[in-house]
Amino acid sequence: MIFEKTMKIKEITNYLEEIAPLNYAEDFDNVGLLVGDANIDVSGVLVTLDTLEKVVEEAIEKNCNLIISFHPIIFGGLKKLTGKTYVERVVQKAIKNDIAIYAIHTALDNHKNGVNDQICNKLGLINREILVPQEGTIKKLTTYVPNENVEEVREALFTVGAGSIGNYNHCSFNIKGKGSFLPNENADPHTGQKGQLHLGEETQINITFLKHLESQVLKQLFKAHPYEEVAYEITSLHNKNQDIGIGMMGEFEKEVPIEEAMKKIKSIFNTKSIRHSKFHQEKVKSIAVLGGSGAFAINNAIAKKADIYMTADMKYHDFYKAENKITLVDVGHYESEQYTKDLLCALLQKKFHNFAIVLSNINTNPIQYF
Image (cartoon, rainbow, N blue to C red; front, side, top):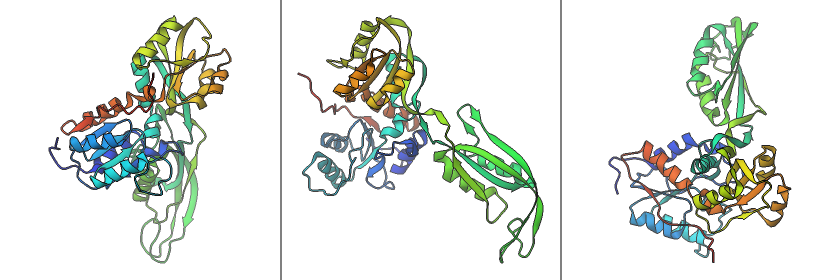
């Protein structure tokens, strides 16, 4: 499989980062381009949940020199490349065969149309909302602009998405009194002419934006603002963003017996067994989901009054936290996230429909059932 025209790796990864900005990945995570050069040409893209040796071999066989992986193969510090661990062997084989590896992980977990939305699609849930909204994603820019330049600066900021967050728009103006601005020895901050002093009224602009846009917002501010030295302040707001966060809450179209809900979950996620807490009620409607390790959000699911909380990697004592308020369901880590690679593949094929985007056919689940 060969691309019909030349395309760089960074063109693929930049698109993914438009969808799921890496700024929203969890602090503990390791996302982005982990192996390879972003400026080399792409021959093909292989999409997988995990990057193992056999996945790298599959990429070689299918002439794909870029692997888009959900989970990062390099998670902790990698101090040696001796081939003693599976991680080292994967990285060695990828480097030897000029294959790049990119991981998206919790950046996609925290996207409203990401991992957990895909789980909700499979379950047919309606009335969805983020389970654990992420904090600190909204920032506010405050700056002062001469009255005659307000519209120009405002429009420049709007072009990069400032002022609009979900269904919420915020850009306020406050006209200030006359002020004076002392130019440096080379230029007047307002006119650019040496030795002049500007006196006049300013407007204070307050505008909100999502944190991943900060560099673009500042670039546009400096470009459109008439002063050589721009006075501004950026602060983080404490608002919880209802469009960014991990986990998701939804409902079945109608109330169903809990046994029926459990059979549906077992069938859809193709697992031989499900660990769960005691059924706390006979019929259920609301369900919270979180792909991967989600024991940390049990209390969030209870606070949302979910009937069921489906996640993975719950420990023995985690099940006690149900306290007859919710039914906790551990469907398995791989099982909960298995449809993520289909989502990634579909997104890439829609954007790059004339190119070789290949879905890995390798089951990377390390857990076996007897």
